[in-house]
Length: 174
Image 1 (cartoon, rainbow, N blue to C red):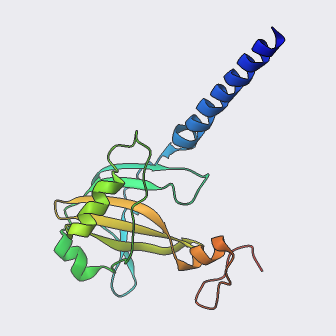
Image 2 (tube, one colour; image 1 turned 60 degrees about the vertical axis):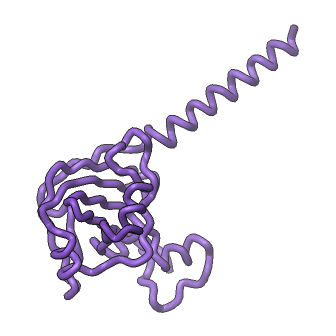
């Protein structure tokens, strides 16, 4: 009888732990990003200055637990041709998968549009925090998406490689 009780207790503990881990990863740490209306969606111009772009229907989430959990969806009147002519492109971007409940951000669909050439990615801000760039994708039909990319310095820092002179100094690190 004691063996059955311990086995049931062990299974229940594993079930509760699994459900708790799932909840913490998918729901618990995310918070809604409330737009301020001024600097919510910005792009870096070819001359290096950052400027806001027009947007509507802003939806965003973020979490303090990771610098790459930031996701935003919006609509814009800025055309893809205008953006391409004025703003700095961002090469080799790959949209990060958002939680399933944040359904406006479909990373696979965004990546497919990027591959098809109906969406392009631009720089919002390089090294927003050390090793993390904020990028904005704009589609031909006026939809936009924002997420954070780990840049080359971030890759080096996270895998332990020497940073080199091209990387900016890290805050709080000698």
